[in-house]
Image (cartoon, rainbow, N blue to C red):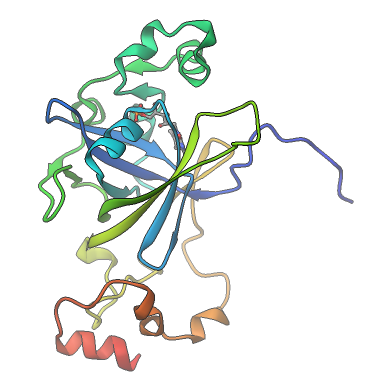
Length: 238
Ligand SMILES: Cc1cc2nc3c(=O)[nH]c(=O)nc-3n(C[C@H](O)[C@H](O)[C@H](O)COP(=O)(O)O)c2cc1C
């Protein structure tokens, strides 16, 4: 039987993304987040306006979306309740989410790569570094900003639309024989559900009806193929 409840959060389960951006002094920031979803080559990111990541992204228009795998617990927990924004430490009561962070133990960490033991990798197109330990990394640029909750008292959250420019995946998650496909049997994303961290079940639960559509049929909504190889031909035929 169903019961009516009033959840304080609606985090039903989405992948953990470690967003890297460039700080004003040229160093790089990392923020774990999970209000993210993709459509075509666009990704929508739900972020607090006061987070250093948002400030950096609005200023530089660039980021890398690094996806955490389910074995990256230590790094994600090290990054949790940290911020690259100095002023959280002194936030006063009327400052909304900033004060919430201060009251909930967020600490200012200027070097998040060092703090979480992660390795910066130079990106191909954008300035922010990729995170070497993340099996999937998407260099991206900001395309749109949408204010959320405009009708409500609770403000300070925005949706940022970014365009994926370039995708890097570790060879361990590529589909054998295909240039442009990730093998979902090999890719083990970390999922956040109601603030707790999970992995997916190791195997698909059943064959998917949707997956009868070949992946390349979605190409018109996504990026053009850069390298045409025999493997890329396989993608088209699959
Ligand atoms: C697993 C995880 C998921 C999170 N998801 C989000 C999110 O979707 N949106 C958001 O604004 N903050 C999210 N946070 C909180 C941010 O990490 C937090 O606001 C952080 O201070 C941002 O860092 P920055 O200020 O250096 O950008 C999440 C934190 C963790 C650990």
